Length: 115
Length: 110
Image (tube, rainbow over the protein chains, first blue to last red):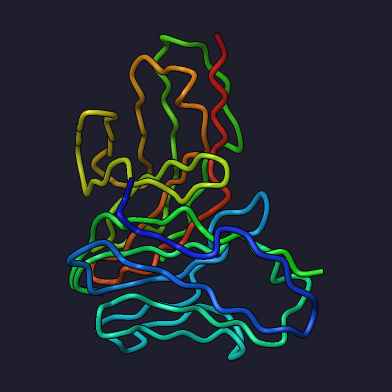
C-alpha cells in the first residue's frame, strides 16, 4: 500500500469521448506525476504537477491535460479519445518536485479501454 | 537521459540468487540508478537506488562499478512472489521524470 489512490479502476469509453481520471496523493506529498502504460510496455511520462503548477511534460498531445488541487490531489483529462489511448494510467506521488531524487509512490492505476 | 539496456526476460528457481544487469553507457555525472518492480495490473514499486559502489536494503542489493556504465540488481533467495517485471532507470538528479524501458520479466519457478 502506497497511500496513493486512483479512480476509477476500470472504465470503457468510445472514440471521440472525453475521460477524467483522479488521483489522491500520499499524505504530505505535494507532487503528482502521471504515466501511461500500454500493454507490454514500460510506463511513459505524461506530465508532472508540483504545487498546482505543471512542472514538465512528456511527448503527449495537448488533448492530454491535467490539474492539481490545493490538497495536492490531481486529475488527468483526455479529450477526443483515440483507440491508442487504451492503457493503464498511473499516478505517482512524491515530495518537492525536482528537488528530490528518490522514490516515487505509484497508485494501482486506472485501466482505460477505448472502443 | 541515458538509455538503459537490460535482458528482456530471465528464469530462475525458488531459493536461487538472481542478478539482473543493466547497461547505461551514457550515464551522466548527476544521474542516479534506480530499480522498480512491477506486478501485473499494479503500479511500479521502488526497490533500490544508488549512485556508486554498493547499496543494500532489506530486499535487494545494487552493485555499481566505478565507471557506472552498468549496474546489477541482486535479489537473494527469490521466491515465487518475486515473479514480476524489473525496470532499470537512470534518473537525473533534480529531474523527477522517470524514463522506463521495457524492463526484464523475471519468472521464478518452484
